[in-house]
Image 1: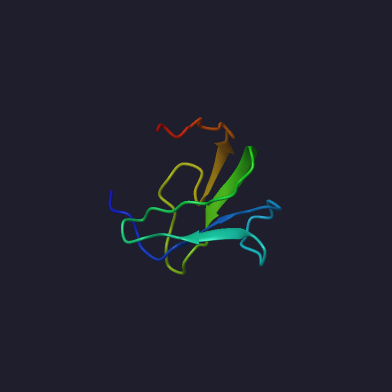
Image 2: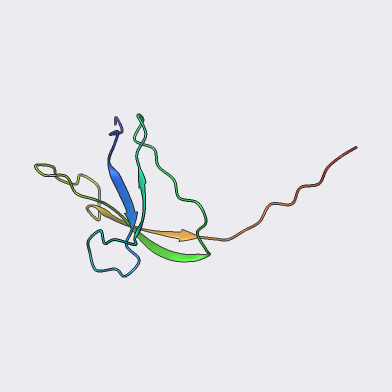
Length: 79
């Protein structure tokens, strides 16, 4: 499957089923990849901002729940 570039992906913070001003969003890169930074641990709803004349092809449609675990990595400087 080929990823789609320049699509908007958002975290639906109030879970109203649409992109609202204030929702955290990202834009897909040329490979269709996207990421968010600064999220706190918990479950959130990620959705695409649907484009006219398109249809979702994944289970769950344009909505995917994800869980942010909040695990930290330990690092130290070695002399």
